[in-house]
Image 1: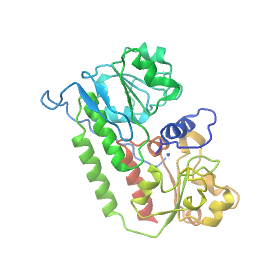
Image 2: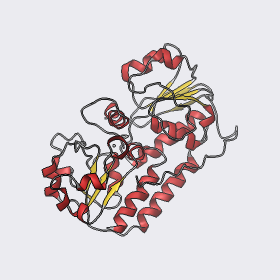
Image 3: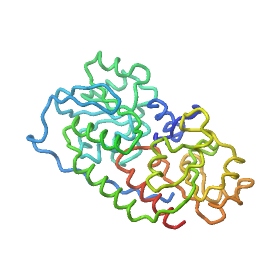
Image 4: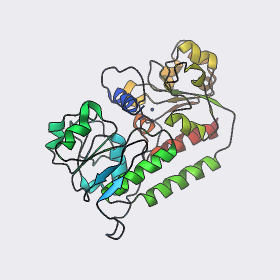
Length: 315
């Protein structure tokens, strides 16, 4: 989502920039933000500890007992924990974890983690999106396991990470994942297939995301063509475009993931020099996304899919 949001040169840490760097450590308003129903608490027969889990692309981790004091240093993991029904075990979340509202938000940082500050929360499990500053080794000395769930590259990664998170916390993810799969498949199947191009804006300096990224694959569900693909000379997945490039590419749809962070809207885009000639702008097909949903790869990806579907259907 990457995110995020996703990979670009680091700037001052606004909420938006923080989400962008989250994806670097792993390598992305009109949106409805409906909270996923919590999965009922599993029975003892469903959960057995110790349990060993292996995140996509990561190393196996053994969780010795059902964690009762979880610290989340990942906004995506925070959303996943609460959607799975493990919210009652979460004692602290990082400063970027803005959802759900009841998450115990603190000044802990997942980007520049302080091992002593984290240890002061007496966690028996820490969940993070990367290993900055030797986080894993530092907490290992204190016998605190760290579950690293890096940025998802595909929807299957999303489902796998939720499964890993569920097994590590004692809350099987089967029902949640099945519901997500079904909802996404139903939305995509019900959306008319159209030949449309699009531009996804990460921030007002015109960083974008290509089809190879997680967010790009969400758009790919609808057969959309990404104007950023041809501009990614380095293969980073997150090229910086120019206004001239976007105007010449003339996208059919524009999606803004810099609404909360940077105050962008259909009106500000239309006011940019030359942008009033872009098809998406002329036809009123500029969609304001929820920055957080567009940068995270957790349960609310279903909401993102619905917003994209709505934009495609109206085009």
